[in-house]
Length: 108
Image 1 (cartoon, rainbow, N blue to C red):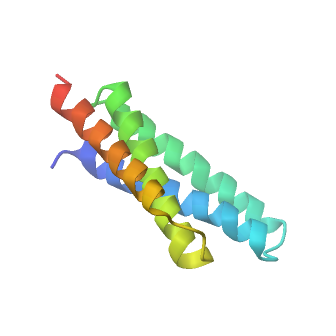
Image 2 (tube, rainbow, N blue to C red):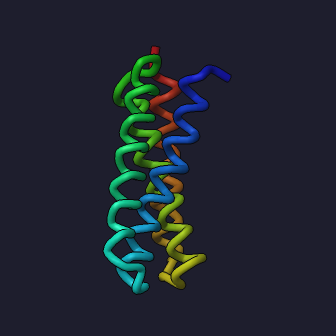
């Protein structure tokens, strides 16, 4: 596993944490200081994505980042905040994965 793929995994986890922290800030009384946490997570995620793009094509790097981030935030919202998760949503999340796999398989 190359450093780019390790950075990618960490970037996705930070992206998911960022997205879920926004939801937490919206539903809990966490104080204004928490906005700094969300901004910091966003900047860290972007910096890691920049590192990933040094070695991976931009479309593949960004596609993986957004797809896996969306899946993680959707599942996290379902698990942590009791948000709805329908069969249709699961289908389209799987379709998202199919698209990323297709990008990987067809990338040079």
